[in-house]
Image 1 (spheres, rainbow, N blue to C red):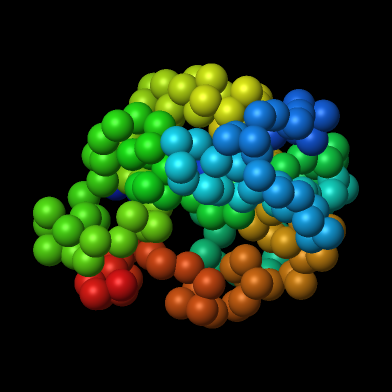
Image 2: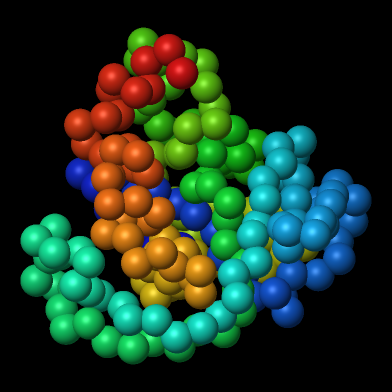
Length: 190
């Protein structure tokens, strides 16, 4: 997955090559199941990595994106990726807190939002993310990293199971994403 920068908010997710994820101590890796997901633990907080089968896809502004495509997404081009693992969700405030010892996010109970640490961490820089990943790798004995733009886009489009939707899984953005309009109203009380 790719990190997106929205109004100085970086949404962080993790990625790793399957060959780089190894059996670690019980406190850092807990389960593997038939869905090709691995669960890891860092200082008591669990997170899951999902296997993504590699493949070839058209990256950039494709026809189904219509008028929402930006000029910097053109021209569309073919990209081939190997298998990789990606975070089931963005890095949560809970995981960031467990690894870094603080929560830099705005959307917290301190600012009138519910005490839900399962929201994505935000208000972190690229350098903050690099420090987080280094510490997470030390805690888990793994080799997590930020995803490439191609890895993010391929996973967001559904990988080799893509439905050809305008957005990830739907043509209606409000069904599959929070965006600038939604954050305050959807975060209150959740």
